[in-house]
Image (tube, rainbow, N blue to C red):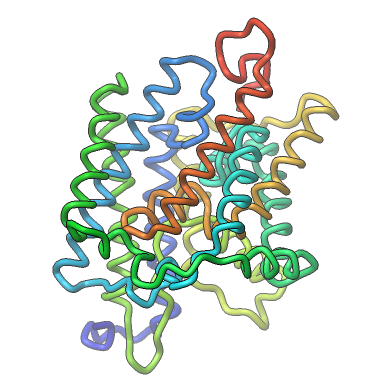
Length: 354
């Protein structure tokens, strides 16, 4: 469709600008709603966990309905997407998801939340993101790549059942079932209406991402990858582009990361929430760096983070994405349980706040 728009810039440049705008909107909404799956899984109080869960599930419900609506209308087609690989890398997804979930508890935030916090001046978050990006890139193309390849080779042949759409009932039934479960969680969450609206708008951004890269910006002569909101690969790409921009062009992911940082930072400034914060102790620094490495390695193995595999991936009805999200949540719950201080009411009550 892109050639019909008559724009004078190439699709790749347009995708960077698109990512920048989409990321800025995400940064604004995520800063306002404190959007983060870690808070939903391991928040300090039941009320905090419930509110965060409501916002996240509201986003997921909208993303599910919107993404599958786009599929029904023929705007996007996920049949050839990596989420639908006929051989399911079960070991990599489960191990990676568990590691990512543990890491996000250790660092007090999933990667999307840490990106938002970094934009607002949180140097802990920025440090974690830099380590996360280095480890993710090393897992994709560096010294950890052999481990990734070995674990990724442990697969389960699923064929067409890589998508829930191939199961009895088809896409309509599974979309409705997942959306209904998400909305049930929203109703029981106790989250405020403005926060839920913000969550819903974040879910709509995931849909816009798929349609934008998979339909609007597609050009037969200069195709780009179909992608949406995610942070594992984009942070790796951003790191690589930053240190080798004369040889490596920016892409959608680079624009997305830059947009989130800018949108969150501007919102924090306007609301008086921007502030420089750093580590309190060597022990805290060590815990955050360990968590950063676990998320970088785990996010690549799992095929994405809480947003890439979860918010954007699950709405494609991918079994791999759903397994990754379940594994991430399981890892987060495990870490929160193990690290809960004796007698504490909250899962991480004695851990310094983000």
